[in-house]
Each structure stands twice: as structure tokens, then as C-alpha cells.
Image 1: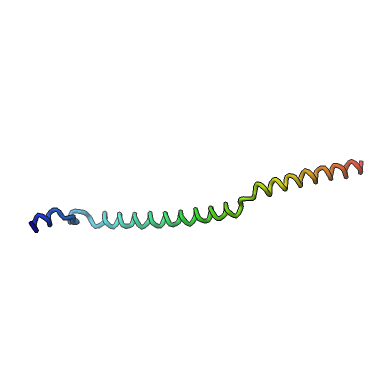
Image 2 (image 1 turned 180 degrees about the vertical axis):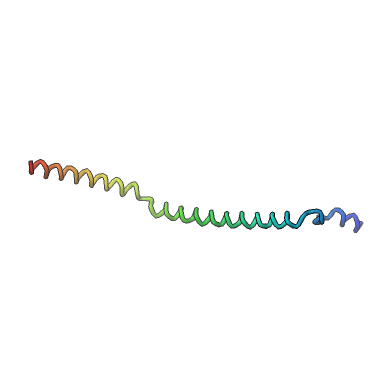
Length: 81
């Protein structure tokens, strides 16, 4: 019974090259580094979006002020001519 359990248990065969194991470990580490880098980039972008949510409102105010300034300058120009 003990021999049967030993044969069925998972084991690492010596036929698997050490370089393959090292490559898999390296690839996993590089993926983890890449994923953590993506997480920090996404966090930075989310905070930027949260800080700039009122840009469209500010742009609307600027356009309104620009229209007012244009009308005022046209009045001044008409008075000078």
C-alpha cells in the first residue's frame, strides 16, 4: 500500500531540465513585476481622473468668458472706428 501511494504521489522527474524550471520561475517573476507596475500606473491614472473631473465645467466657464470678452472687444473696436 505504501509503495502504491509513493507511485501515485506527485514528484519531479529528473528528466525535466533545470533550465526549464528556472525559465518558468523567471517568467513568473517577470509577470508579477509587470502586473505590479500596471497596478501602480492604473492607480496614478485613476487619481488624475478624480482630480480633473470638473474640467468640462471649467471649460464651459472659459468659453462663456471668451464670448463676453469677444463682445466687449468688438464694442471697443466699434467705438474706436
